[in-house]
Length: 524
Image (cartoon, rainbow, N blue to C red; front, side, top):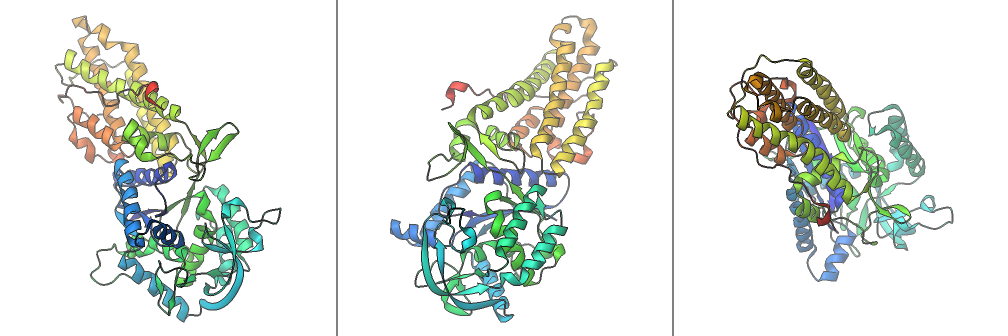
């Protein structure tokens, strides 16, 4: 089974467009795999523990559990608005997850991989971790990325990260499929150098943090949030599950084919801590996940592009976007206007332009024309025709290239390039329609054969496009297929796509605009 998991979202905030992009990316790839005929499983969820959650709950005068339930609802509402269909949902307060985390902690402690020591050093409240001099900038200071930093002197438990650093270095150097895109490997190797002499603090004393999973071997401490949160990728995949559990069979899922994360959490958590934790648990090199690292959505400013930040107040709410422009427009924009692994500038005018140009004017126009004229000139039915000129042959032949390009790019997780192939195919059909102008030649009954052939070709492209685009804009494609009166298209696999999926004698319905144009003046 193909296993796709994403970073779980921290419940000390609200979903923004960066979260939305990551989840839509995973959702599209999961739907694509299933439409190929593969078994695929998409897991996402929320990280609910940690000091920041406890502090925020205290400020609001509520129990941390009450607080995280409210924030979790905000994330699930957003994902519902975006039409996500995940197969598994992770919440780190789930007793099943707690049991799994404590089993792992006890095993590592019994094997000497976890030990206790006194440590005095600087602590980042934002990142919830101790810092070393390697985290200082050229000026000898801890940068803004660490937020408030304070000096602490306390006893804690540590994971022997340094025991696995040399293995990790060799693994990263020799495994090109561990990190995608490949240019991120250098970031990880540099981070490994910084981690080679520092073990990982994996506990917090209850006297300052109670909102966490208690260490099974010392009830005065709770687990550090990263050591807890990272384990969700296996705990909710069925690792060490109890008999009778409804969780998946772990061996059918692991290792994760795609573990999708943002570049900001690549190091140290997901490329240093996580593989070393897995190695210490007994996972082999072949059982390490593949990390697909995506870039950021930035905001244009007078000085260029800047990262979205709650403190600056420039984050974009995906729920507001969907309510203003619709699910189809937002999903399409999120995977069309960014190349996987790279950054992109959020631009509302680009969202509108892409929707209006590629969906409303291109696919929507083709769909409306084909259905309208089939109703008007062919009694609403595809009819047999002997007309077959060179332009008909070229349009049919263009399908092979479009399918090959689409599949190649989707298999490499490059959705924006896959969409270019589909849009090119649709554009070719519109050029074909303009060449023949069935709305004009239909005035002469002698051209009936040509009209039927042209309309059949136009309907065929609409049908094929509705299958190819369904992982990206599922609701819109379902509306197209309903107007085609072709429910069988929803069950069609990509490998079954070939010219002629709409049979002769097939009746279609009257068109209704699937992509009503969005007017620029409506955007704020």
